[in-house]
Image (cartoon, rainbow, N blue to C red; front, top):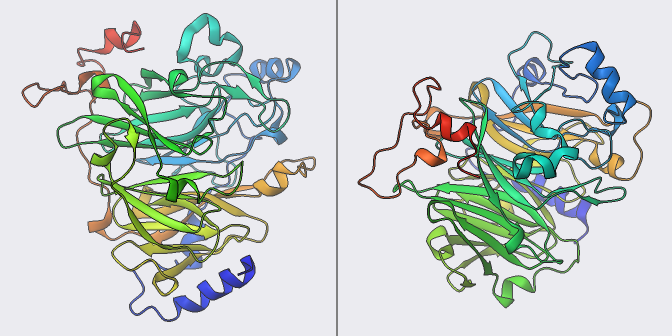
Length: 427
């Protein structure tokens, strides 16, 4: 079925859904009032001289900066600006969603400028953020970053460092853990998606999709070991393109939905089935997709957001309902030429979509100004749908057994592990 026909069918199907969820189709006033427009032209420089220096060294080219992924904590958005091209001064930034100017919000590097100095990767070890391609804040409010270690990926790729996952304590703005993925990487690997599970026993499991090897990379952080779980032939054969994307979506902190963008099926498995190196055997086929789907994110509970490849309408699927077109609800349609790349929960009890004109950007149509981007609310969450707030602890403070007690990490001045963080004790 052609892509346009698929999208039209999905739109028609939404009229058949009885009792659309609260928030499907937010009022235009709510969207316009709260939308932000992050741009590489609006950077929070330390001083004018710093900006001049970055321009002179070729480290800052505004039109080469594209926002791609986002996470929200409180009133702050943490936005990725991958180093697709040269001239991207930092690859993870933050902005105030409640600031005075939503049309030109200032983007600041996170956690600091020094963390993004790619040229110093060898001298400073693995704690430099070379090229962040995905971000995930776990339910303990630790931010995890997937860094592929390769820059200028749309031009002449340069290998700067090893692929890795970094953890940042949001309260202290410090990089507190680094997981080296080099031993789990092959020449065919294509790391793309990052999900992080924190179990009730306080164990942390990191999941990274590797479409090139048709596998899910699993890192048991609590036990400091990593391995690959190969997808079974039935799932692997669903990958029909050499540059396909393997999407991972963690739901209810216990189930991972997975699917290749160009594949025909959606699958799921309980995370307990991903605890040892093997070929995955315990999984369930959820259903046949109505087309090539781009999975955008979820509410971390039961609702998944997606769009059809090449189309910009965003749909919602409640995983408690059958995976079929009559269960898909239209929740947003970005402006023409804009396509959403991520949907997350956050500020003001909204689900937020990050959209941009990245197809034009990738095809070299950047003009004199560069890409457009918009961070906007698309769905009103009900109180029961909000992610559960839990006390924050840094990865090093988490107990390795139920008998251990974690330290109260939200307060930097009282956290007993701050000195260990500063000394790089976790890397």
